[in-house]
Length: 278
Image (cartoon, rainbow, N blue to C red; front, side):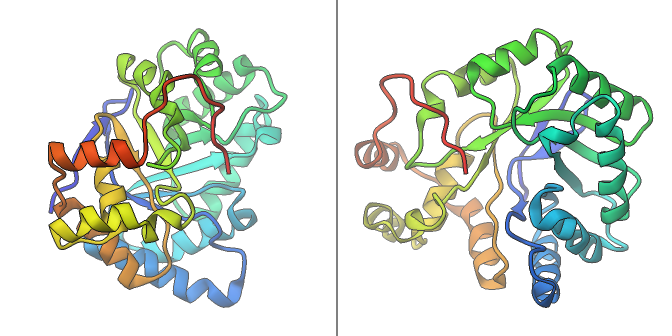
């Protein structure tokens, strides 16, 4: 199965479906299982891997390095920087540390993990320096609501590659204003926690729809995200069976009747909502 892709400002293509690594790298006793899971995901056909220097304080990046050794070509690696490291000088140093842990020469997409105390102009200048040095290809942000993203956009020269936020059937607030704004500006939205940290994978309404397709509730939750224009889903799992199940969501094609049932079970927002953040 071929995973669709979206275009980043550099002209590179980013798959709309990948692997998240939140909570990985926190216990070295689990390193082999985590590395094996990432390798299995690559074997299945996932080529997008998302991580952050915060995950296991670099441990997740190290697990990814083990998993992609000798397989770097064709992969899109995304990492994120702590806000307190996002100064003009600090961002360069933090990125170099991530590159060393990942054992790669370039991060394909580098994100500000959330808004901190550094002026946007300083972080953008640092990201541009890293891009000029060839250490990153594209850059963007995470956990930005529309007003903040608009403020960033006024300063970024149109080079923001994505905004990564919590988005799933149970938390649809971004559909009110953030997602439409990003679609208007042709900026992909990366959706983390697509199962709402677990409950959606066991939801009865999703199961009823899943049964029609010979699928699972988790696959329906992913299929719903994947049918939205400009949305990238990055579920995390260290279980090989679950990873295979996630990949199988590509086969689930939701009908108009399915989508209507989902809207009844999980109504879209009718007013502005606070951005969901984990």
